[in-house]
Image (cartoon, helix red, strand yellow):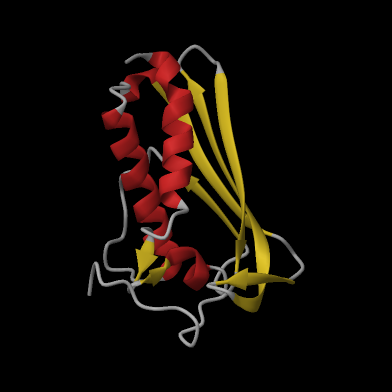
Length: 147
């Protein structure tokens, strides 16, 4: 594809990473993560992880790097073209009401920003905002995809 494919990579990565397919223990990762952290900054090019750490935050970091690399490979973008790739996830300070699976829930607005600096110095960014309520087993069903 080429260097211009990076816009599609950022969009596809962000959409995939924030989707219901990103899970932790069979539940949406962000619903579990929201109670643990207010902010996450992830180096998407880092491939060194502590696999023994089993927390929602460590799962979020590992999944982000793996999903980013997957999208890079699908688009045939060379990692050598990328100088920096970062993901910032930030929770709003105040809770608000929203809906999860048709049920009113208290949750937070979350901003997910993916930023890439190419070897040319050109910067690309993709942002997504979403509503995230803390995981509630009374409302959510466990995914049947995994353990």
